[in-house]
Length: 494
Figure 1 (cartoon, helix red, strand yellow):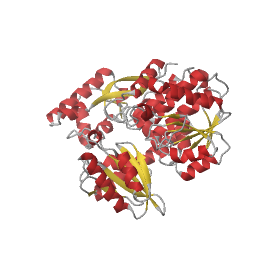
Figure 2: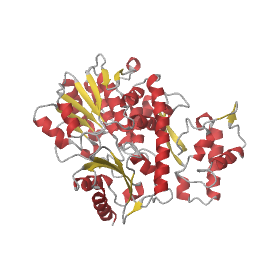
Figure 3: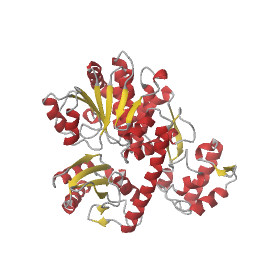
Figure 4: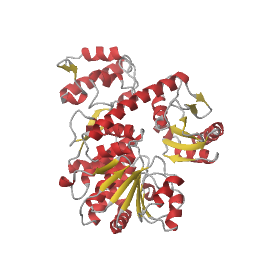
C-alpha cells in the first residue's frame, strides 16, 4: 500500500493488522465534528473489513469513562479523536490486561508509550494544523482496506439505537471515498483557518478528488454558500468586515439590488450555489470593489477568497454539499448529546437523522446568538495577557468555547489576546474553554500547554490544540486558574 501519509504508513498497517486479528472491536470516539467523522470513517472501514464492532461516544475521556470501557467484554478498543492525551490512564488498564488499545488521534500524547498508537505528532506532523482526528482515522482506514480480506458488515450501536453503516454496495475497495468525511473533520477542527488545508490534509484532499467524492477550487470565503439566501450570506459575512454590508441587513439588500443580475426567482432569493460562474464573478468583483472603496486593508480583502471543499456526491443546496456547513451541522448534534444523530448523517441516513440534525442546528444557532449577545453585553475582564468571562449557567458548557471564539473582535473583546471562558459543568466542576488566533499562535501561543498546566495547578486537567483548548477545574478555583494562565501566556508571547 502507498498510503496518503507515507510517514504514518508502517504504524497504520500495524494498527490495522491488530484490528483484523481481533474477534470484535469496541470503537470509542469523541463527539465533536472531528470525532463524529473519525467514528464514521472507522465504522465504515471496520464494516468493510468484516470486523464486528460496536460504537460508543464520550464527551470527555476521563477515569470514569475509561473504567466503563474496561468493564466491557471487548479485548480490543479503537479510540478515535482522543486517547493520546489519556495514554497514562489507558496504559494502566492495558497493563492490567483489561484491553488492547488501538489509538488514531492527533492530540498531544501523554508521557506514556503503547504499541498501536497512530498520531501525526509522533512522526513530526502537526496535529493542530496538518492532520485531524478524522485524518488519522482515514489513514487507518486506508491501511485496513489493504490488510483485510473483507467480509460481512457490522452494526453501530449507540445510546440512540442501532445504525447500520450504509453505502457498502458501491464502497470503493481502497476506502478512498471516505476522504470526504476526513476533510469535513479537518474543516470542523479549524484546520483550514489559513484559507485552505495543507500538509497531510492536502494529500487526503487529493485522494478525495481522485475518488470523485470531492471538488476543490477558489471561492468566496463565506459561510453558508449552499443554504443561505444571498442577502443573509453577505449580512452574516463578518470575518472580513465590509462597511455597509456586514451586519447590515438593509445594506446587503441595497448592494445586491444594485447588481444587474437575476438574484431572485419566483419571489425567492437565490443562494450562492444557485449562481452561474459568471454571476458569482460579478458579485465577487462588486464585493471587492466595495471593500476597497470602504478602506478595508488589502490583507483583509485577500481573506475574502479561500479554497472551497465541496462534497460532489451530495445534493447542491444542502448543508452536506459544503465541508464547512456539514461540519457545523455535526457540531450541532454533538453539543446537544445526540452523537447518534450526527453519526447517522455521516453514515448516509438522509431521512430521520438529517432532519433531526437540522432541528438541532436551528437550536444551536439560537443558543450561539444568545450567548454572543450575552458576552458582548457583559464584556470580558482584561488581564495583562488574557481576557476572560464566566457564563455560569447562562451558556451551555458544550458551546461556551464556540461562543468565546465568535465573540472575539466584538465591542470590548479584543482579538489581540486569547480569551478564556468558564461555564458550570456540575455542582463540583467548571468547564474552561479557550480560543486564540492563528496570528497569536505564530507569535508563540500554545493554549494546549496553558490549559494543561493551569488546570493541573488547581487540581483539574486539560489540553487540546495551540489555537483552541479546554479544561475542567474544581469550582471556586477560577481566579487562581486565571492568574496562572495569564502568567503562562505572558511567558509564551514575551
